[in-house]
Length: 134
Image 1 (spheres, one colour):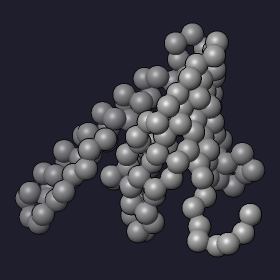
Image 2 (cartoon, rainbow, N blue to C red; image 1 turned 90 degrees about the vertical axis):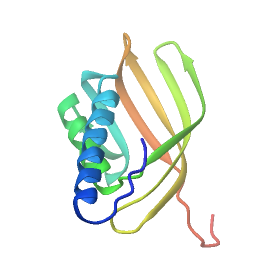
Image 3 (cartoon, helix red, strand yellow; image 1 turned 45 degrees about the horizontal axis):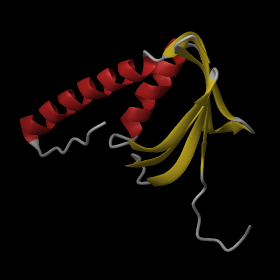
Image 4 (cartoon, rainbow, N blue to C red; image 1 turned 120 degrees about the vertical axis):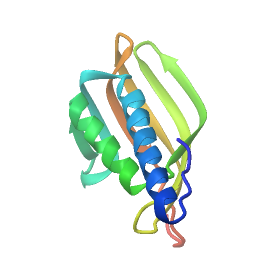
């Protein structure tokens, strides 16, 4: 996912249109890996297991919403492994949300596959804080 810099006037509108198109393409590319009845457990959410998103259309909406509020979101993969129909991917995510929160977290995804599609994706990331506690 690239970063789109914008100036003022028509250039800014053009940049937003290109960014919007790129986000849609990135969302669609990511979504193509998911099974129709996939479940995505997000790292943040109202439940102890985060936020549960079920079905390809619902996951697509979450991805679209995410790219709207974190326009420069980027994942750098560190390592991954596969065992049967399960896999783990370790990565760093960076970006800045619309409210100014800086993302710079290491995390991982635990996958379960059905054939060549993602059936379940469970995301975890480190909580970064400057408090001295365990």
